[in-house]
Length: 156
Image (tube, rainbow, N blue to C red; front, side):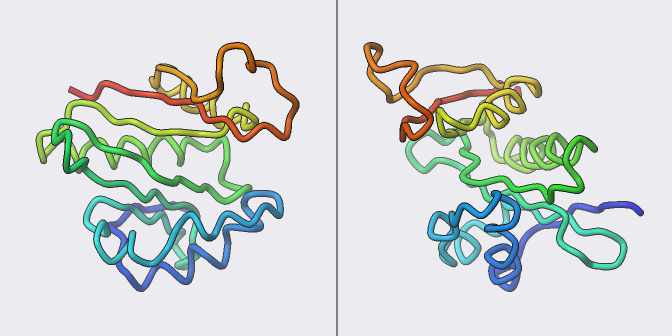
């Protein structure tokens, strides 16, 4: 079965919310993707679908208004059975292609300090850790830490 990418639409929002808790192991992160993201940033957000129309992944991202040479990936999700297939990389590369046409030269993203899989994935596709909002003295906090890892990828 093949997976194709397309530009998101506001109609994709309910589909994304439906799968999020399952894709994040029961963590309810739906509040992080309000409908306004697909109302105002659908043109730079992507949907991955299988041949039968099932949602296989999504990426919600936008170009910065304050730094027009930068874009931000707000949320990326890949169905558990699609992980390891390269779909996450395809979503990021597709986003880079879309925003590069708008003058973007670097893409930024943020992930949780406790999400080692996300940090490993992003650094594996070319992102570099640029910082953390966890104070230096607090690094190595317990797994319930709410810190964030800041990352950047050059796309020029």
